[in-house]
Length: 252
Image (cartoon, one colour):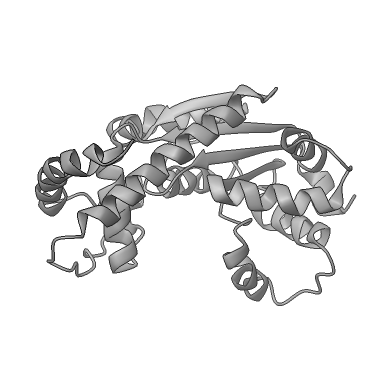
């Protein structure tokens, strides 16, 4: 075991789906300096950009890459954090399976390769607005907004509601998969909602710190990331709910 891995005494995963407030939560935990530095380390599409950020180190296997994520994602008190969408968990599971042991379940692999893993499940109750927000982010490539930044220009064109419907069904399917995963998991899981996070930022972040057993020496800093919901979101929600009735009639 590398020195970096040995220094990580516990790990946690923010388990989420797109547009669930996961970057808001991750940034809050990172800002404490004591709750890991959670990012999307394990999405295959991001691996090259992480390696570039880390100075193009030599990586001969996923074990090497895993150790690098511990270096980047662990705070000095030994807490490691990462953020996972459902598809990223699947990719991580495939990579860990190559390291073994053979025939191990996904929970077993996570316990073997991550110290004392626990799970923070962040979901959005309003899946309709979540799907619309996802469509807008895909269209604008604007995934979050830091305090002081203006909103990115948004195409003032009505979406194809079929596209939004597909995204909504993807979100609902992803949530079912997370639920099935947690049902077979023998590890701590903290359940949170996006709605509670935006209404009670300090309280929800504090509940995560308590769950992790992390104490702070100073009050939480105010959030850097700003809510992106606006009047257009509300207009599209009304229009989509009407169009969705016809779309749902074609789903068996």
